[in-house]
Length: 275
Image (tube, rainbow, N blue to C red; front, top):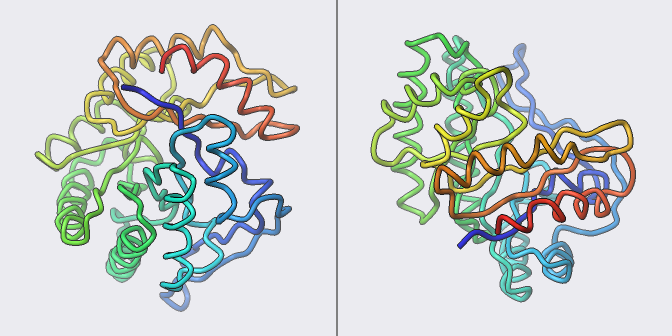
């Protein structure tokens, strides 16, 4: 049974500072860049607020965690449980496991394992890992990514967290490269399909191609300057994944102007009929 979820990216002007992870090429270390944003809801308040608004699950971006201390992560887990809401996926928005810099790959893999542990402690079912930023035509990079995702998947299973990827960033920007990656990854291959990350004449075919291995669909519409979604185009996307047999979380995405909850409601009005 499909159900409605949202990504914390859809509330990125409501949840306080964004803590971006960046690679420092000079020092060979990870740094954090803080981008100030208004704090309307804390992460601990969000599950109850989302449940009140009719959502069944939430996906949380890693840069929305104000702390990764075990006590705080236990509070996050409790907040979801108290709200009766599923913490479906922790979205790790950093990492290039196909980098030509071996030092960075080693550091990124270590950081990803740390976030897998964080996902486990805060009760997330899954963690989304970026497959890589190499070109989608780079066959060697696809195989390297598949091998590293397989290793990360195995680690995730030891702590009860499923590792998934997404048609996000360069390596998985085409349906063809996604299929090659999934085939090489093997039986544990799993993904998120985002409507906004495929482009061109074959977009709807590519959406259908990745749907069978998708744990969630990022329902990201095209908007006009007022944040009004293109309903015709959005329904074509929803029809494509529904026809492919999708049965999971429809994660609503809004990053347009104005009130973000109101923007989400406009997307929900269209997507709700597919749930």
